[in-house]
Structures are given as structure tokens and as C-alpha cells.
Length: 448
Image 1 (spheres, rainbow, N blue to C red):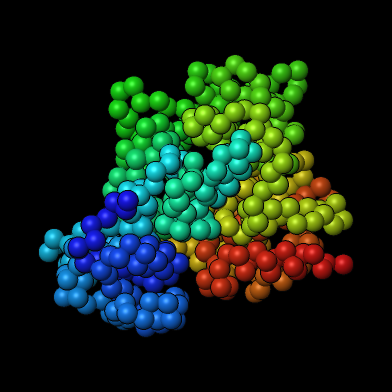
Image 2 (tube, rainbow, N blue to C red):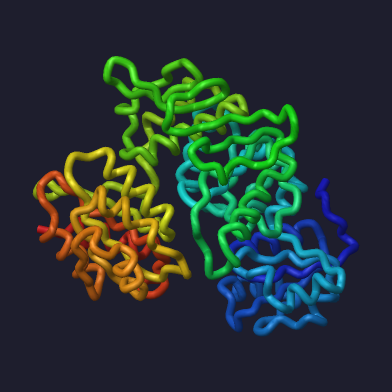
């Protein structure tokens, strides 16, 4: 039985991927609804008109009077709640909600909920693979892959959900079995008034959570907890009670739980300290929902990483090339620079730049000084990054990605690595970060 009143009128605001999943969900349940989108030709308009010709749709500037016909607006993550028309509707008593709220009301299986500025896709994928290896009927999605509402099924035993701050803004009560914010660093500062507002949006993931997982090296990930609420931690330090971390024995580094070594770090196929942290976070989340260690460790040994996330492309003349195009903010680029830099003998040639989304790049300076031989800067905000780095390393500008790769190759020495980790969004030069990463990998693969 769906937990939604069918006699009320709803409006889906935003006709992208999640908006279309809302349309399917509401139509299947006989709910009366309409659709609005600020764009004249939203991505799913043709699909809507073909499959649901009876549904009223309005494109272009949002009409407050039209929105106020609804009892509830399901707002797509891409549209800021600060949009004046949405605020006007809310002021007149219309409830603002989203697809994750609706998913949470209808999901019958426990939810593992994962957010964070960086690494959430990697950790979400890992926990999903761990659950599958343990024989669970698991559904993985949300901000990653399949929209949440399309995952709902009575035979699912566990949901593993990646959730963005934009999705969480409209999530009032998630009620996850276990929730985590992996890390918090500046991102989307073009949408939020500052880090505190972004932090508050992320922490909505903990509403109603029965257990929490905390990064003990990032105080901003720790929520206000009720007394007796189970809390597990992860980090790169030695673990103690209810904690996952790294332990060293006879010169060998191990992933560990409390005082027990689980597996040698060298058995991981993914490189870098940041990937060790991701493995520990996944273990903590899996353990919280009762997944056995043997299945989780087998998954870790098999995991080769996600495309565009510190993905090894090739080695040429003793230089490794890594595609970290998904690093669309400073925190993600820092994780890659430090993670790879601490794990290799040579230095990094960093390719960075693009649309900085209003970020402060000064946080890159120390890590770049410590781990990089040079920085090759591209895109709209190359100048801002150049100013932030100052004299930390030699800098060169490139007019295209191909030129950046050629310059990086000429600067690299045997034992070094060329790292595309832009610290910026891609929209000034590319369709999306995937296209940026694919073009980088393709260009590197054909280097003679």
C-alpha cells in the first residue's frame, strides 16, 4: 500500500531524471498531479507527452498561482528552494518536498544513506557490492545511477542510497537504518550562503537515523546524537572501540576493526590514502547493517574503482596518468592530490581548472606545494587557481585539454604521475565531468 494520499493534488517541479521518476510513481498510484519546469524544453518533455499525454505541463517561468493549486510540490534537486516562486507558494501553506522524502515513506527495507562532499559514489557502490556479495537483494541509487523511486520494490532487502545536499534540502524525515556524511568541504557555494548552510543541508541525512557513521578526522561529519544511538567511526588512525582504521604490524599496514586486523592495505586494487578511507567507511556502514566481514573483504579485494574517480588510465615512459574528472570541488581534488601523493615516490603534474562555482582555492596551496612538480591550468577560473597557488609550484596555462596533456607529459619525470583533478565543474568547456574524463582518457591512450 502506497503511503500517499490520492485525493490531494501534487505538482512535480522539474522534469529531469528525478522528475520523470516522480511522474511514473504518481501515475502508477493514480495520484492527481501536474508538472512544471522553468525551462522551455526540459530534458524529459518528449517522454512525458508521449507516455502521459493527459498530464498538464507548464514550461517557462514558474506561475505562483498555478503552484498554489497543489497541496504539495515535489521539487527537483536542480532547482534551489530559494527560488522566489517556490518561497511564495510555501508562504501560502504549500508543502515543499522531494523524491527522497516520498521514497523514504514508501521503502519497506532498511536504508543505508550516504552523503558527503566527496567519495559518496565510491562508498555507495562499494557498500552495494558488499551487500550483493553477502547474498542480499540490494538496490543502489539515488544521486548515483537509478532515481530513488524507480528502486522501490517489495522484494528488496536493503537500499544503499547516495544523496546530495540538493536532494536532502527537500528530505524531511529519512529514517535510515544507518546514515553518514563522509566529509564536508566547500562545494556549491554558488547555491549556498556559506559553509554552515551547506553543512546544515548535508546533516538532514541524519533525521530519524537509527545508527550513524562518523569520520573521526572531520569534526563537521559528527551529528547531534540522541543518547544511546549507536555510532561507528572510520579514519586513517589506529581504531579503538566501535571504530575502523589502519593498524601497522611488522611493517605491514592493515585495514582494521577495533583491535583486529582485517586485511593488508596492499591487497586493495585502488591506490591512495583517500581510497583506504573509502574502504573503511564502507566497512563501517556494512558492519552497521550486519554484513559479514568475509563478503565485505572479498568485495574490497575485487574493487577497481569508479570511472573518473582517481582512475588509472595508463603508464607511459615511467609516468602514470590518472583521470579524476569527478573532482568538481576543492575537497575532492585535495583528497586525490594527498591520497596519490602520499602513496608514490615521484611527484604529481596537476591538471586543474574549469568553473569554480564560487569556491576558495587557497586550500589547495599546501598540498600542491608538498606533492606536485607543476600545475597545468585550464578553463574559465584558471586565473583564480593561479592566484591561489602563488609560487607553490611552477604553473603553465593551456588553451585546451589536449594542450594540457602535452604540457604535462613534457613536465613529468619517470616515477611521476599526471593527475586530472580539476577542483572545478566542467560546464565552461565540456558537457559534463564524464565527457571531460572520457576525452582525457582517450587522449592519453593514443599518446605515442
